[in-house]
Image (cartoon, rainbow, N blue to C red):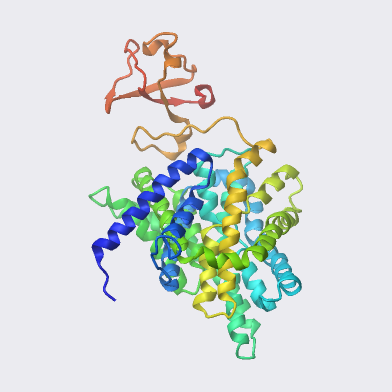
Length: 488
């Protein structure tokens, strides 16, 4: 089959442009951006503008690379001090929580299909496989919604949810792989549980070890290599992440777990050109999310979802209002100080997204008998979750009085690198008309006493902060302060 590069590139560029414009409109109307990317993919697919893309192997490869980058980025952006108070809760939700979700949902799926939808013939193991595919909270969706919308939550809920979603994909992945092995082995009339269980624990152990030690090795390499061109450091960081993922997989470990832990180790270490590397990686992560959701959207035809609509609505409703809350409350029983309203909100953020769809491709490539049914149900429930939970997340946080009023001030207009230990007191302010009511001179600026102006940016130029300098609207001030709340 001949591939014409120019038309293909034109199609890809149009697809990305439409997605970006759609995301701008979606932000205005409160629609999750990733849902729009899925929608754009479906619009351009075989049932829309007619682009046929049914290569599941290629989709699985694209999705694996994209998820690797997303998880690595999630680890890089997570601070030890943020997750330390809630690390135990996050780990329990990412392991025990995923297992319980799979068990509760799998049993429900089996009996629901058997009693009410007998035309969809599905075995108990296949029902458990469908549940395992959807058992994790999707990292791409959680990161995109919590960080993209600037959601600020009380009681360390945001780092807990990000830790859970970033670290629970490996558990769902291993459950999916083990169940596929059991089903395919069962087709030969002999099921061997021993090797599957051993493989499960080996993947965990190797993944944890590789993530920690290779993460430390990556920090050492970045600091020692002394590259002449600063632009090479983000490339080196990306290369380290991909190497850690693939090396762990070859060593029979879980690459997703390893790459997330490695990102956590690297992100909490000091390394050369850290700020530049993280900014570049942030853009790459968004590109990965866009490509992942677009590719998965292209795979599905809406008309295939109609026959499974009722059963999908039933399973999705059970997961959102039954399995997820039950799992959260059971998993957090040892943590009695966790308020009930926190548990309710955690239950609501059981978002589905690209990861369940990606895992649903595995049964297709393994030629499982009910694989198409599994894929269609997972896709439908993902749309349902993003529409219902994704659009209401901030509103539910407000109803439960868990939303912080103040938005965190970010440091972005001055491309300067500082030590992480002082970044929490480095920030910037933009001069508006309200700032100039007491006078236009810098000395008249109503800023807190424990605040020092270091630099002024005006029309792309930098000015020294003298007391008698006249300020104008849209000036950017780089400040150091111990009273960031006083600047809000």
